Image 1 (cartoon, rainbow, N blue to C red):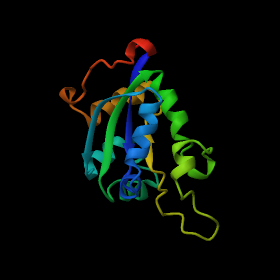
Image 2 (image 1 turned 90 degrees about the horizontal axis):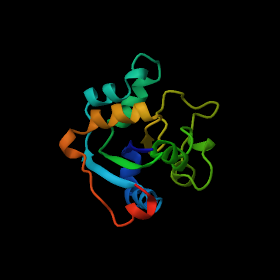
Image 3 (image 1 turned 60 degrees about the vertical axis):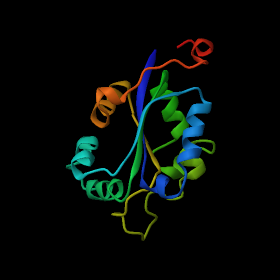
Amino acid sequence: MYEKSLIIIKPDGVQRGLVGNIITRFENAGLKIHGMKFVQPTQEMARAHYSEHVDKGFYPTVEEYILSGPVLVFALGGINSVKKIRLMVGATEPASSAPGTIRGDFAHQSYPAPGEPDDKPIRNLIHASGSSEEAVTEVKLWFNDDEIIEYGKITDELLAF
């Protein structure tokens, strides 16, 4: 099934100059970019995006992290793209991400080690929608309808889109 997923390259990914490497991985995997924008998240956007976490004790660090700089937000499409992208991104905790995944190759922080403060944000580079339902909600949250472009690529026929 063809579906779209939301990806956010978080402030650490932008600041470390990893945007091109990350986009290249997705395009090389045959995924199609339907919308993309560079934004400075607001507190309102952060709260809407992470609404299921707002009342949790760790939320202030999540908000601090996502507001710490600009992010690149994009909608990627493909056959079973949500699952495929999650596999490419790796585990939420960078230390648990396999080599070859985006977090496994590029993330350099993980959950606090013993003795470290446990209120620091985990800089894990990237967000990817966790389910097809979440993807639909997230794409609508970050993009207006006219910002999502449907178009053909020369490879669509080969990839059966």
